[in-house]
Image 1: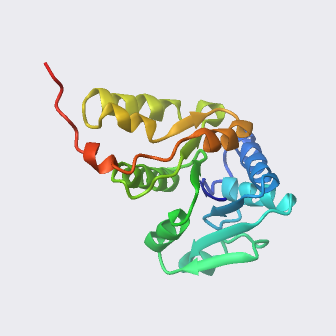
Image 2: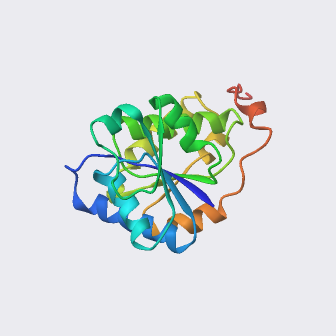
Length: 196
């Protein structure tokens, strides 16, 4: 299985986030999964790669050329794919993935996450999307997304497009337990009126 991991590059975060990222990478490697991520060497990016590499796992980094010019890439990644821009990076990260795992992160991580959710809503992506809710990081987002549904900007079914787990050990079981998204998802992508 090929697992796409979205995560931050900041080193200025609580160490608990990096510990969780390292542990996730190790668990993915132990399960025989390939970790595909943004190719960086710092922050949670570096930690998830280090975790997978520490267990002999296969790691693919996908990084834009301009980031390699300032040496943001992970020095230990044998499979480093250099692409021309951020758009191509996002496409390559998601294409062929068997699941997405979003770790805590900033605007780049959130942009990638929301693109995956949007593509799932439009029946262009069908695999599980898991948010690792370390330190309750994604709880406010979950509350906001429920408001989006309650205010009828999305249908109730759309709340099933992603799920939260609090511990790294729950990520793989949740991936395996999550059914493939509906092939007919476009039929309910448009918000329906309520009866009444």
